[in-house]
Image (cartoon, rainbow, N blue to C red; front, side):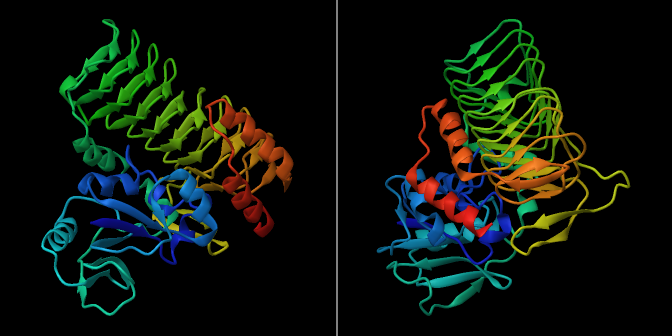
Length: 398
């Protein structure tokens, strides 16, 4: 069997996070949307149908995975916005695939949530339609901030909680509720660190480091090779692979390869890849009047209400903020922005913005790509031709 995650017409609503990646690669917990489905069907083949502009980047990201190619044989098509969670919807899909039922399409309201094709082929071919009930589907970019803690708890079922073999733990570290803590081989927990899993699991990935005096209060996930800096305080958050975390971080996601390594507050926020927040950068995640936050929707070109009270910063890939940067409640920063200056940043910065409260000018591609190559080289990675082509086109559109 093959599982095929496909993007629909709402993929652009998750910009700037999906301006440079497939919806399936969004990280809500320790696992991405794609990885969650792979844990359900670990032996299944994988295919992805994405926007044409992203195809080459996705092929580079997922070598060996079929991208924008037709499938043959039994195929379960899954809307990439459909979040794999335990419940009736997942059980129905598992039963359908296991029982080799006839072709059918599963809907959620007005949207196609999934489809089963025993012989693969065209997703649009005629097939009976069945209501999947009320599955968990992302609809807007701010949905990625909802219930980060429960996503960590659910993903933790894929980890051997209580397993600490191969980890290096100082005898002067404190592990509260160690049966709810997973320490991967090669991970290090230094003296004075506190890992408190009494309120939720704490997951520490391979070769990750929790430095002296850091406090992690579960549910928390620290990805492979990530660093939690000295005296950091992290709760209900996902620190993705190769990220650096310092200061106070609450209910936030750092996707991967991003740094918030210094003092300052990050709350109810989502950083993409290769982002960097300078020392003493702070985000507001609550309005002074405790009102509902509105957020700039890049797909619609306007601010729209989120229905949420707590939202901080959403930042696209490769964006950077200088020291002492202040972000207001509900701020959206595009891809490849270089931000600096005193006072609050504007609540929206388009892709390739250079400047701050005094105004923006375009971030020259030559300089932007030069920085990207230097930063990625530090992690032993190359800035690919596929990424260059995608970002050049994005810059022209912007």
